[in-house]
Amino acid sequence: MNRTARVIRDLFLTALIFLFLGLVVVRLDVRNSEAPSGQARVVDGDTLVMGGQRIRLVGIDAPELRQVCERDGQPWACGRAAKDHLEALIGEDRAACAADGSDRYGRLLAICLIRDLDLNAAMVGSGYAVAFGAYEAEEEMAKRNRLGLWAGTFDAPHTWRRTHGGMDELPHMPTGTLRIMLSRLGDWIAGIWND
Figure 1 (tube, one colour):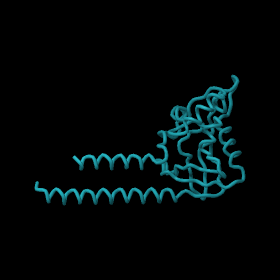
Figure 2 (figure 1 turned 90 degrees about the vertical axis):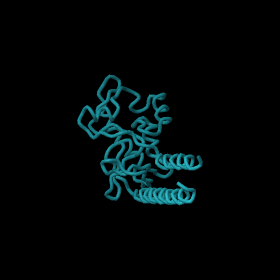
Figure 3 (figure 1 turned 30 degrees about the vertical axis):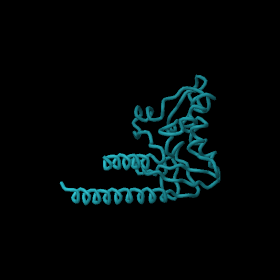
Figure 4 (figure 1 turned 180 degrees about the horizontal axis):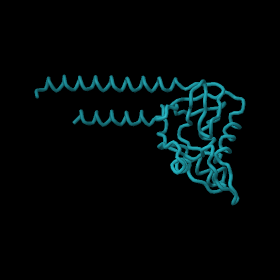
């Protein structure tokens, strides 16, 4: 292949890659604008409904409503306690959420705030949810202080769902993971072209 043909091919591929990346960024921006704000209804310890839309708090996993854990050698309705704790955090305030895509069940994956309080981090930090792709530092603090779930014994929520016929899901990717992967892909492609 002569030099002119390679230059034309490289320009064409570059234009296609930029078009693809532009479409991805636009799609990500649309997803980020999809998350509603307003009064939230708590479904369970990691799911809200706002404006008729189900929102899954990204990066965390709370016990299911029917899940029972153990505390001081006694059964403890930890799923109900997680829901109650999230309701107490929200109170009568309005939530503002930033979406990070959707899960396979159609729920928006979002980080939600009440005033300046990150609800996702607060649920893990208080021990009423576990880290599920993010918030590992908050989980370590809750474990150390034996807060919430960590004050007793429990099955991880995803394990409990699997053994009780609930919805199966994988840990969530932290915010910005797709953008980081696309950036690395662009660096890799640039490295190939420079060779």
